[in-house]
Length: 303
Picture 1 (cartoon, rainbow, N blue to C red):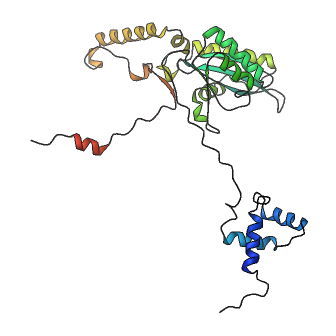
Picture 2: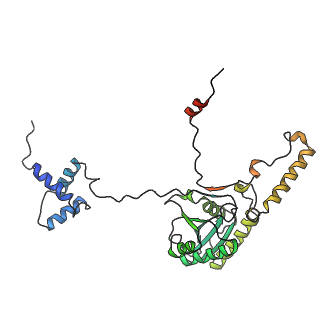
Picture 3: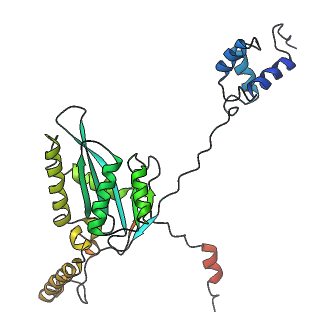
């Protein structure tokens, strides 16, 4: 049998280390910090490596300290089946001609119609400026049921939350670091920054404001959005899409009568790509999968 080293700690000395490192004063300290504090108290229980070894043998190196438990953020699930029900907003950076200097574009959209209902550009991100944009949007388009945003400083500021509370609007927030929780704003910014006329930089604040105003006007009135049946957002927002859809269907029906061999039998119908979805979702809940066992139980027996 291997002889016990002369300098080995006794079981009582090892227990003293565990008791000291799990005490109220030292439980949240790293072993090296605890070692230094014990020396300041005139106590030497062992070297830093010895303290680590004793704690490791008792599996307390990682789990010893008290740790905060952060509950998972709730997954936002929002649905709109018409305009002015759910608005989504975010802030994106616009590069200036001065290195490291950016302008902030505040953009709010209606998730059902995809229409940009508000756009402001400022030299900084500010909660009061965000609340000012919201008041303007609500004055023009009405008060929505829900306003969704990420968890930025302006989005969760007192100015914005107080305004939403005063107007009885439910606030909704993305989970941390999950961009898919704010898909409509993210997609809008992608269209903005990948457009062929998006400049390399903006010469001044006036240039940035004019560009964003022009972009919003084009996006709302001219951009045939694939997510809304290739309609333009303004037509959906203001209910003009019914006439547009009727005109499209009439053109298809006329073509079918002229060349019936090129179409399937029956009246002309709009292809799926041209149909306006009935609902717009942020994180649509998954439908429960059918239970194969239940289907087996309900299947009638063969005669």
